[in-house]
Length: 305
Image (cartoon, rainbow, N blue to C red):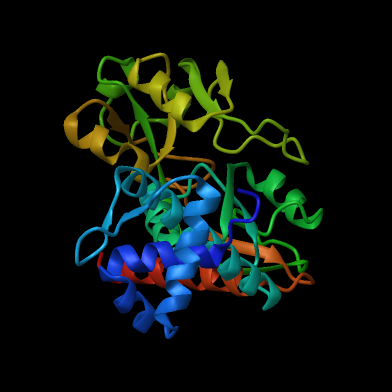
């Protein structure tokens, strides 16, 4: 069994697909005697008869029918190996580490990565949801290739970035929450009296500032989905990216709050989301494709309303 070869598996599969030794010989551009010898050797080394030759056309034996899918899998795996090795030799990455803010629209992320998987089936993706500060640190330390991040303030010159989309925040509460019964454009000072659910990165922001925090009593969570569940459960109020709660607002599971001021503005913030990488680190072909695809899909989404 140690002497089994890929060529024997190829002959085995080709005979099964073509229906005869002669047709397999034509398909592989070999003498029929070479095909016969290869399959005999495979049968000898396997200790099994793979084809019944008693009829005009060879047919798979029970053992042959059982082992044929295995042989196909071996050939497919080798083909994948060769494809990936060839890509790496030409500069194609074996793996990409992509970081994404929790605010990035999940539907857009899934659509781009689905297309990426079809275009680069041999390239693995390592995806992690992180804060902007954590993501930029990882890019600087070369622990990540690309990051989808909030650009609340312009990133420094160490990064190249391309605009992807904009996400607006909406303040929400469950229908039974006291704030949900206030009229539109109520005084923002009323927010201070009710528990606010705040999303906080596992690592504090560098300058220690709180963004969008209005309440005296604030509960901090590190997961946007958990924050969402607490808001639905009426534990408190808080701001959420609009795409995450659009269905809840339409169904009445959450109510949009409309304070007259939000951090000095008369409207809720809308901020850009960008895809960034370290400027001094050149991107490989798969990473370049991914950046461009995010830009194109975001532009198409914006154009379609």
